[in-house]
Length: 358
Image 1 (tube, helix red, strand yellow):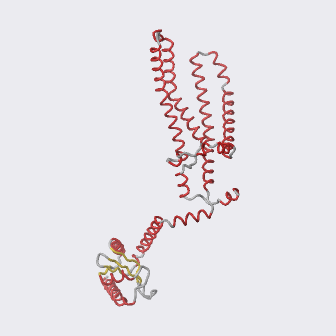
Image 2: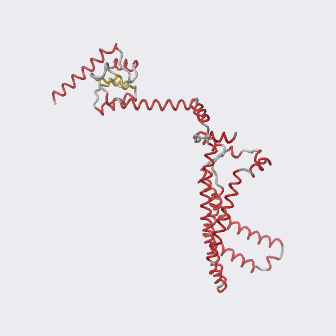
Image 3: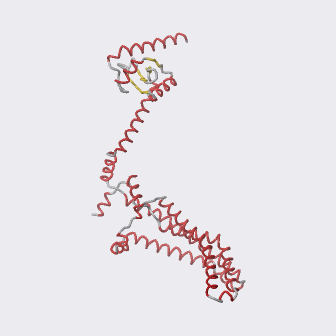
């Protein structure tokens, strides 16, 4: 039954389904990338802070070894000395911990995006249920994590082995150098090893991120019936209906205004109403209203007409009659034939006179 249900889920999740999943805290998450990002940040922080940290540790060790016996004279004096050193250590370590936390948070945001979900913070009994815990242990997800852990272990083992094999000659020469040089050489080897491990784990983390996003989308896929029901539900929403209606009106107005340059004449009222008419004697039986509007839209029609040289005629009563009775794309009624014919005849006479003068 589960296999059949999975086979039926062939449709990509809709934006609404993805949004609901995010509201519940369901986002793609790669623990591998989080871990490697934290490790990379740790290596960078170690590289930056290591010299100062070593100097601080050396200084603290020197102070501890050379401290006066008065420090141990009584318990209170010793505790004050001890507490001051603990505070110093906290002040040194806190910036490194803050950087590590920032690295993990940024890696999580890079994969899942910035998402606040109160639903994810709600208490769930399944989280503490022994049955759910056992089920999670034997789930496909746990086996994937086990497989990734084995791959990581093999990767790291191979890298450590090959890298240290190349450094055997360096280790062989360390017994002939000073202690400070030994520390520097070992630190350099450790840093090189850490960089190689970070690169290998980063490759695994990126691969796991791609896999987690794939599984996330697969888990949210929908059946065709679910897609149809969601569309039907959204179409029934008053907000969606209003938005669709608004878009339809905007598209209709855009198409209507595109017809104004083709008009034969624009009748105005003179400022509140504008009606654009088109008439072709050879192809049209009667004039057709191609655009109409009031107030701001009327001004827009007049503006386009002036830009394209379409005649604008003031006929208040005729403009109001056409505006109130005829929709764009429809021919004028028979009772207005004579009035419109007079306007068109005037346009033709003016055009003829203009041609004679030129």
